[in-house]
Length: 157
Image (cartoon, rainbow, N blue to C red; front, side, top):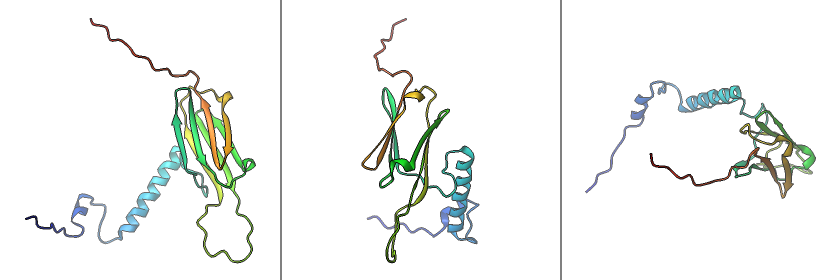
């Protein structure tokens, strides 16, 4: 027969001496998020202040990189796609529409958005294409040289 194991609350916090019971755990988590945000801003991969980042996928194919970003309800003229050196940047703004009456609840994001992706140096920047279909922005970044897979024989020495 197996008996339940009882743990004393906080017994594992001794492994992390910087976490103490004198301060609420939420303050420690907020501090961790703040430090992580500063790190990401210093690395240049965090969205700029006030901007949100749309859900996106970055896929590598044999001949190109494919970025698909979800931007439902955003007009083509409100989206900007730029590439500089190795960084692809998708920016724009989702404008809040005018409403009649009182808005009781809203979970939609509005305002500036920004998505950044670092790409390898071997891309053809002059052949990048972007299309917006059904609220999904698809950016195709061709590789400078298509990668072809081949089998390599191992010789015996």
